[in-house]
Length: 192
Image (cartoon, rainbow, N blue to C red):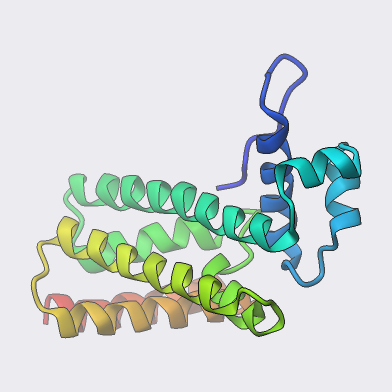
């Protein structure tokens, strides 16, 4: 789910260049650890250009979270759908989707869990947390729609299991130790 590096042949707007750079830096190291000077240098833009497109770091953080939501949710939905179309049970399809993400070289946990943890240090804490909640709600809706799940309580429990698995994988727990218990717990909720 890493953003594609921009080649010399590819024309993208300066705003998008800053946003893609911010995405990679914020997702890998967090927005608190990534200063504006670092963003300007990595984006290869001037300070004036940077502030013309993003008058504050707060606005860039919000743009990053919206962008991350779009690319992650698109990836998640298409990957989960692919596993379900192959005839996988919902518990297996969800587990295998998450496994693909966890083993990717650019996995740094859930950008929205990470952002919620960092939100307290920002003057836009409530906006950050709202975007994060909306992301989790949309993820839950996709799971419910694709699996045909109608029980809201079960869907909420599934989200708690998924978030727990994400955190364990992010802490460095071996993916092969995270996915099997997740799969069993999901099977108990969904198919049990």
